[in-house]
Image (cartoon, rainbow, N blue to C red):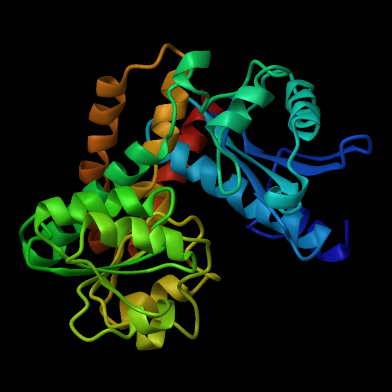
Length: 357
C-alpha cells in the first residue's frame, strides 16, 4: 500500500479500521480487499463490489470508505452488526469466473465469521450462491439455496420511505404526488424506486448510461421522461427531488452549485464527495437525506437471512427508515448541524455504547 492509503487508514478520521486484508489467488486471478471498520455491534456485514479500479490504491480507498459507511448504516438500522466491505479488482464482465468466486469465498471464510458478505455493484445472487459453497458467512443467496434473493427490492423501498420523510419535513406531507423526482441510475435499485414513485403519483425523470436500463423503465412506464445524462438531470427546471442511485461522489463541488432540487435522497453509497459538501448543501437550502440511512433496506434484508429470512418482518423493519430519517432531521435542527452530521452522531453514540458494554 502507498503512503496515501496508510495515512488514510491510520491517521485520519476516515480511517480507524480494525482490519484490512489484501487477498490474492494467482490461479484464478483473484485480487481483492476486505476491510473491517468495526465489529463493536457484532460481526462486520457488507457487500462485495466487483469493479475495474484504475489502481490498487483506488480499490483499497474504496473499501475503506465503503466499510466505514457500513458501520454507520448498520448502527442506524438497529442491526447487531458492525461494518465491513470487500472489493474485487477487475471488470466482472471479463474476469469473473466460478474459480475466482470460490477463491474469494475461501478468503472470506478465513476470517472465521468476523465478516459476512453479500451482493454489491458487479455481484449478484448467483455469485453469492457460488461464494457460499466455500463460505457459510455469505448472504444475498437465492431462495433455492436458503437465501433471501435480490436485496434491491427492500433497498428501493427504504429509499422511498426516506424520501417520504424528506417530503414530510420540507412540505408537511409524506407523499411525492405531484412532485418531480429525478433518478440518476435505474439499474438494480433505481428501477424499483421508479415503480414506487410512479405509484405514488410523482412525475419521474430518469437517466442512465445503459440504454437497456432506460428502455426497461420506459417500456413499463411510458410517462417517465428521459434526459441525456446526470448533468442535464440535476439542472432540470422544476426538479423537486434528486435521487442519485448509481456510484458514489454524486454530490461534489461541481454538482451542488447547479443542483435545482430541494431534496437529495437516493440509493447510491458515499454520495458526498468529500467532507464539507453537506454544509454546501445546507447553505443552498437543500435537504440531504443521508445515503447510509435511507439505503439500509438491503442490509436489513441480508442480515435477516442469517436468522431465517422473513420478507414481511424485513419490510416492517425497512419501513422504520421513515421514522429514523425524521429523527435525524429533528436532531440536526436541534443541534444546528447538517443532517449528515446528525446521523453520524447518532451512529457513533450507538457504537460507543456497544464498546463500553
